[in-house]
Image 1 (cartoon, one colour):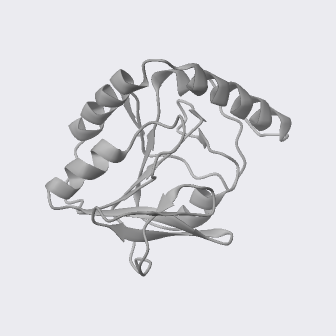
Image 2 (cartoon, rainbow, N blue to C red):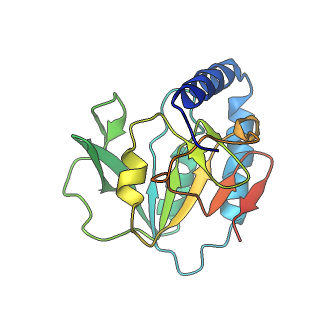
Length: 182
């Protein structure tokens, strides 16, 4: 469904309110973690995760488990209008441009195998609605990378307004289900 701007703004407002009202986030995050690791990431060694903030679905347990399995973990660092993956090994994070913890160090020059994206909403066509900065769409454009949207089941909606530059996900993982784009 093409967007006129107002549709995305209203959906963002509604989903932020729904996430803020969620009182069982801890249980949902546990189920989400299990669902994420039930996916097969054959041959994947490097994972670019968002560092959850506020009411976003948690990624700390995913990062810890990936590190324990010997995988490479990267968190985003915002640099102006771009975002770069920076290696995370468990070190302290510094407050970034949006108040989100970011690792210091050199940006990764390659492309991680898997990118885990935050979302405010997603639909069955694998379009996601983010916060509106376009950072993930710009970063992912033209890259061969497996894209996994992570969110709570109530964030799945009938249709997400989208534009031609919006990058579609390959999989959606929630606390109740896993959807794979075929």
